Length: 257
Image (cartoon, rainbow, N blue to C red; front, side):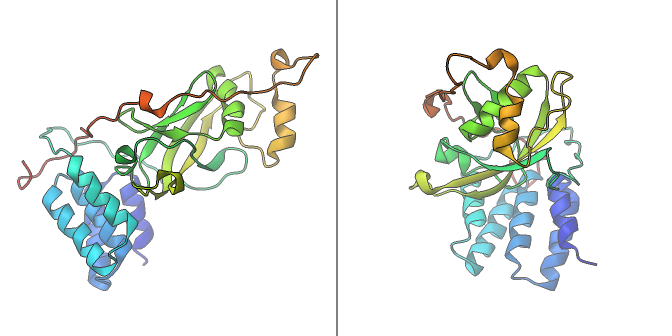
């Protein structure tokens, strides 16, 4: 039985105990499995084993010294604080999180990325939040820190849907963060439509033919006879989102006070 899909699922579900066990089993089969090392390091970190997590990330870098996930993991460790907490987080089932479904899912590259220090703490599979604003949709992490924005055309489509009651869930999917060259960095997220408002019950969030569906989607109250509708992106400064120290807490361990 291939343990890799199970190990990935355990991480997405935040079942850190199972993730540690499965990735350790994979490493017994192949000690140079970079992906397993990175997953193990993340599971150790969020289980409270900060020192052990650092050791595993460094082991991954001995095999591949430019591995971006391991490098980001070590950056995360610099600001991650382990605090004692009695209650463990309940695991969430993300078994179908990244399954593509026409009309209800979309993978998107963010634009106008935020602070590199904040982005470096983001890991694939981390849940992010969409925040509809007046002229854009911002994407925030679990600590409400700004990560980036949706492309303007997609934001124009989703804003009225969100404001009318559509519900979406999103996760980080792929990352390539270059701290000294943010313009060439990439943050890709996966968005899933969870439910639709009654007003737009028959309107798919992500039609296969975006241009044609977009014209049909435009609400009547936004159609102007004298001139075509235009959307001007809000030129908000990412500095409005002041990065804060990551205070996310997970289960503690005796070796990390």
